[in-house]
Length: 520
Image (tube, rainbow, N blue to C red; front, side):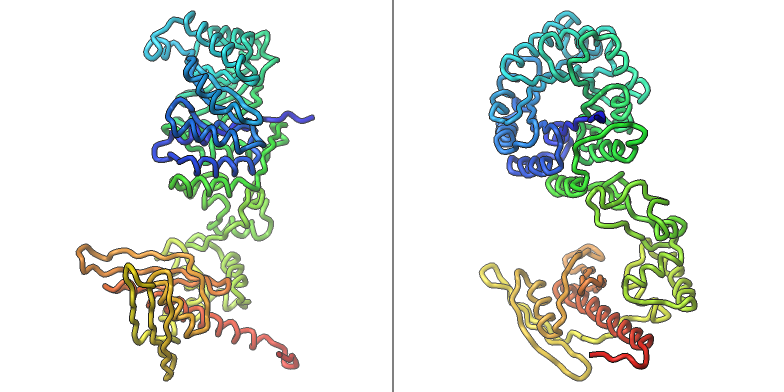
């Protein structure tokens, strides 16, 4: 049987202590349910003594979540332990997690206690916790800066007192992987009763080494890794759950370890946390960042198109992302450009590709990223403006606090003018629905933003929209002092581009159609 590493998720406790990441009770429960889908082994639901809200959240998670062990954190004092037990006692699998610092720095400046006093407090806390709950985890806070002999003495004593899990945290992110791993190795060698417990790592990222230290720990005997989604947590954060799990999975032949995590739920879990906290993931974040499976360099794109394994050590699908992304920019090559045109419905000859690539490079020098409408423009052999199929003649909006927003839109197509009205959730939504009624073309708005071109109450608003027309994304832009009119102009620009694109595709298909083919 392979060695299994238990995943202890502390997103709801240590992660929530990250500035700006507080969650209410309902949000905590929602995230806990997703953690259950992710199949984490332990959810540390909070620090019950911290506040009434934290207590209620831990209690609700303990009552509602059945598939995971639910842990409550407590200092080595009776009020904390009582409160933690009260919060988690209804859990299907409860755990009291109690802790006290063991480094001389913390003893001198924070606790103001001797080693003997701390040892007595630790033993008492575990014994009392054990009288309430069968599963007790004990953490030696600041273990990585503790005297190793004293650390071993404390560990041996709390195991005798009934601890079932021993956690050795790198509380301030000070350790280097080889010394953090050596601490686990030394403890395993020197503590005679160590085989009766599970050793656990808990690493912070102050030096950017939290995941590396966690891997060093499991390589040296730890079989529980404490971590958070997206690596959130105090200061620079905690070890990232997704990085630890995927390192173990991807380097299985090296580590010989496994987890019970459903990795296909990783991306969904990450997105939910970002949505709940408002803390977005950096684009270059490993595993779940927007660039994690995106490729712009031409050499990389060529390799990916030939065989993904050339530049991807794991599949995007393995973490719940649908597919890799070939980002078109100034570093992209012809193969990626040809591939994207094929996805848009165009089969370019070598000559057409060469001409398109020249124009593509000119645009790429001016823009960070090339979008589909830019590629459409390139096919017109220049940077000419979009064909104006529909033109906005007039717009009238009726809206108010007690009125359902209604828009009347007048559009011109060639010599024909059509007027129609629609109601919507807001004036912009109503106007877009009126445009859809006139044109018969339905678009799904995927991005909408307005920014002021300059300051002042009469500032011009620049509107940007991205609209999905039956799988084809088109951008539209407009500037106006009337942001509703600007919004309609931007939408119509995107619509005109979509219609022009379809005409070009239809025309290309007719060119390559065999003479004896019949269409119905």
